[in-house]
Image (tube, rainbow, N blue to C red):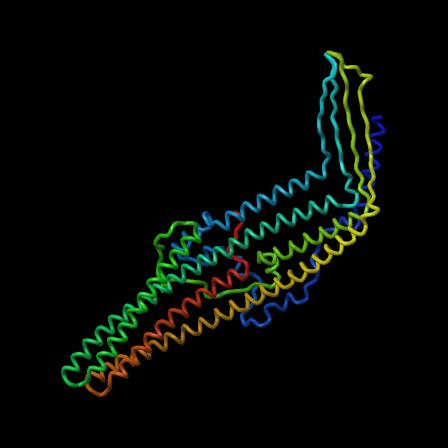
Length: 452
């Protein structure tokens, strides 16, 4: 009997090996992407083989205070910790799918008349000849990798958002400083205009207009202070902390890379977490389609038992029980249902293929836009600096002319307003320049290290 059991198991194993080359066992392979090399065609910067995204985030964002806040966020951020547990959940699902490929066993015992009992070990195994279980395992593997890509997506987004929020605070600080300096200037202007009015060189209208402009700047200061507090609270929530002041440096002290490289477009396939998620979703639908196809084929299972009975303390060898049962289940009336399931799985696979393609196109657009913003902001900052120098000279000249009676207050007010606007624009453009670096780093898939 034991020989028979071994023979039957060998026959089934041979069948499995023979059919393992069947298309139902085929692994997912990426289709050709002819548009991939054209993703960066419109960019006017060299696409080096090494992407900026391959550089660690603490080498891109060199502000030590910002680095501390990013590390805090990586430790306490709620979404990132949830993503980590999603990975653990997917790991458990994969382990379950792997164990489904192995035989299951159970032990049972039963007592009878006084002093007698019987016991047996039962085992069963589904021979995965047509790959249903293997495809389920591979689908679970793709789901695990997708959850890991999701964790990467959350982390890269978190690093970029913390950096952008921190730099936004620095921008607001600088705008507040400019407004406060402007307030001091308006106070000086009001004193000058009042002295000129007493000397008969100007009138009350000029003084009132200057006071109105000062009040407008004071209102702007209040708005900026409110925005700073709101930004600090938002950043604290992102970091997983209660509302508190955010320690920070200055916008002028920031040093970011002078040269950026997008690398080669193919790197987006491995570094961009959303692109990887989309491809892994496609892989899952591929294996789901294979599983749906396997439902058309017979299901072969093997079960067996080995046991004995005993009377008192004596085991009777002649009462050893051993059996092996093989079963074959072939769908007959369920073919319509199986066909519908296969068609649904194929439709889902086609949808996933389009979504994967679109995710790659969207990634290319984001990289292009970030580089254009970086280049434009750099040029704007240079123009802002030149404009401010000219406007500072204009303010000084109009003030001097007004004191000597060769210019009226309107010229002074106009020059002051233009200078304030130019200084605020420079701060905004400097922030855009920094933000473009953050956005490009994020668009390329940077900011993630598995060990973090």
